[in-house]
Amino acid sequence: MPLEKSFASWAIRTILGMLKLIYNKMESTMCPPERKGVTVDAGDYLWYMTEVVINDTFSWQNATMHVNTTGHVLHAYVNGQYIGAQWSKYNNVGFIYEKLIALNQETNVISLLSGTVGHANYGAFFDLRDTGIIGGPVKLNGSDSKNIIDSSTSTWSYKVGLTGEAKRFYDPKFPYGVQWNSNSVPTDKPMTWYKTTFKTPEGTNSLVLDLEGLRKGHVWVNGQSIGRYWPTMVANKNECSGM
Image (tube, rainbow, N blue to C red; front, side, top):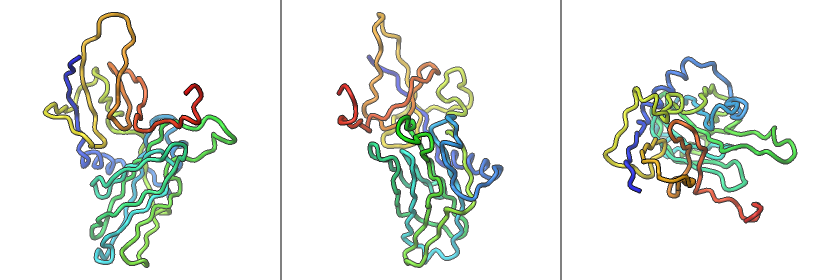
């Protein structure tokens, strides 16, 4: 059936601006905390933020950021600029993210968004498995092998969840302050909220929402959560019964 499509795109600068205000007011921790213990099922995402001071940008040309994470997904920002994302493969929860970055003279803000889709619920000590960027390491490597900054023990700030979740972007009963753009639908643009409307189909048959083509996210219908989706992550047939 034809659908009326509209979407709201978050400006990355606005998100990080809000996080910066929170960062200044929050209690600090001296290393990236364990995600599961901080979020306590309040959300799938945890923001990690820290600052790095660079006095000589020449020696930090072609710098590389190295992040060791035990989460399913990682989005990375440097000075408000989105630099990329990576996710784990199948049952191998955790990976190393490396990316070339550009650093400014003096203070640089590193913001990492760690996401986890569910937790292990079987096996020995499954409840003690760490998630997130716990301890890192989070390092910056300069063009010279001697230029290494290990931010793992630096001052870190964190925030649970996404701003859009806190402001209930998904709830039609709370439309205030949300600017939706219906001119075009972007693709390959992370951290974007999409909204559409459709008429209730006739009959009493079940309605299936096909999310093929999307990567990872959360779906609400009429303000009610119907769950998470991750169609690009296909389950291993050898470990799924009934397949």
